[in-house]
Image (cartoon, rainbow, N blue to C red; front, side, top):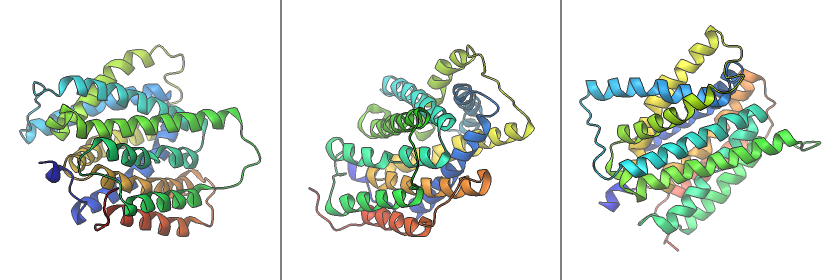
Length: 300
């Protein structure tokens, strides 16, 4: 069973993960745009709450069972709390810093996940290919977003710190999906745990904020709706399904692509400056992902 749940990524899984990386890269820009209309914590709360209903409808239509008496309830609640904390950190970081900088730090998640998987997940050990792949992919990310700055202010520090904490929370949830009884739950149930718990915690909390609604308009509502339906519901159900069947370190390695797309969308939509190393960065990132998923190297 462990081998079935930790098999290497195949073409179907890789195709989905690339598409999901594109959506997540676009999502960083969308979050920053919607932050203009509502407080980051309120945005997280609404997104979690509204996403519950399409998933319940999806489960009803396809007759997907939601079972919580299989030992998954307690780890599911913990995952939901971590999910709420993760997105508070991430959305707040985008209030303090640029899409480019936040994406770089947040999507170091595969580093923390791959390292943790070596010690906590059977048949998902580090090997020479994975180590080289992680290093090369990180080099690719730095090439994509590095641009000398004249100063480092308090706002950048908070943005960097929140991004890193969000990344660690995400990696922790991914490890829980493999190492706790949360693995007994279906992908839909796993996502509902995270959405319901985070919604219960964050919605009443966020409405105590003075500026929980800022300057909302129809365009921002449409952007927010796309986040809820396409990225949260369709995207994350697919990601959880992939995580339940494939190697954690291999699937997470595709997250290195997301900052590349985040940089591109930041440039196209928000006119963020883009550096000349982007093509070289994409080469290094893809090479790193290839090495992480390459078979044949012995575990260490």
